[in-house]
Length: 479
Image 1 (cartoon, one colour):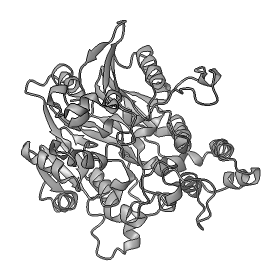
Image 2: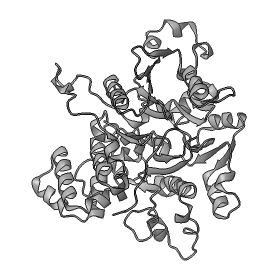
Image 3: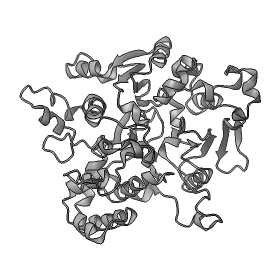
Image 4: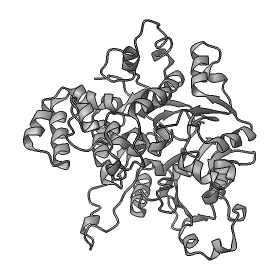
């Protein structure tokens, strides 16, 4: 097992990223059937080989150039390498695997802890109980080598293609399984049954992998005594749910939590209680957004670019006087439901502070939490033009990952949002060109300023998640 320990610490959305947890698309994604796609929280089926080699692999390479360049510099340019050899670079357990302790892969971490017999038996028993497998299969899985078993438990299938239980294709969105807040880890509690196995695997990893051994006493988990199942009703009562896409660490003392399709008010309440009781932060702002599949989490509506710049969906985030509406919009019943509510809770105070819009909240964050002295700037999805704003938000124009302040990753398909970045003074570069420049030492990582890095997105964007979703930051520098 990996002996290194991570001193986890994340206290902003934009501090220089030093360690991150990811999961590359696995064979389970290639087995999502159209009839089951929505049950497994996918909007569409995607082509596995394309999403791996032509799209996600560039993400992995870029992360390594920024976070652990020694693991990639010169490794992929050997002319004698075959395509198979190059693919091994991305596959845990293969001889050529990059094996970084700064860009850490869920499958590798799981394989590490499965080397321990007691953990392997317990986890196989738990998963077989959840998936209603036979006892004979439980015994067979418990005797399977750790690396292979890790792939089976994630993909749901044997090497010969036999499906044992459903895949968990949403595991590529590692943001949702837990949140690093200062030097604590808040474990998520997913809203949908399709993500239950993800939550179980992540708990085992965080509690048992030596990478996190310095933090096991700082893992926050919803307590068992919250017995919502005792309330009247036949499984329809509100449960305490929380997903990482609804949590943003804004500053060492301030966290945002979204109440959305996936995070319930009870979940937000439990998270606030845990954060205040353990003195993790002093302020938590809750943003209630419409419960629509279009939005899903707050990070589909806005993310941070630098301390005074945010990318947002104007039709939901803008202050009321900025939103262009027809008379019927004010009169329609739909608009009454589709509103945003924002409450800021401060430890030790009884009454929350209210904000009239997401933009006003973000302006306050830039000025008061982050000390920005300039005007807070908003880059709008689709350049704030209908229908491009909604079209590009659907393909995650607002869901960006900051590698450091002002350097963000986004999809190359969101043309009008890209133009809005350019209008606001940002450089734009395609990831393939940037990787070539970094490999040839034509540019250094530290020389980049205010840059949107464009990632290929023909297949990956159809999974309905951007690079904010596909990252679980473990360490960021303070800003």
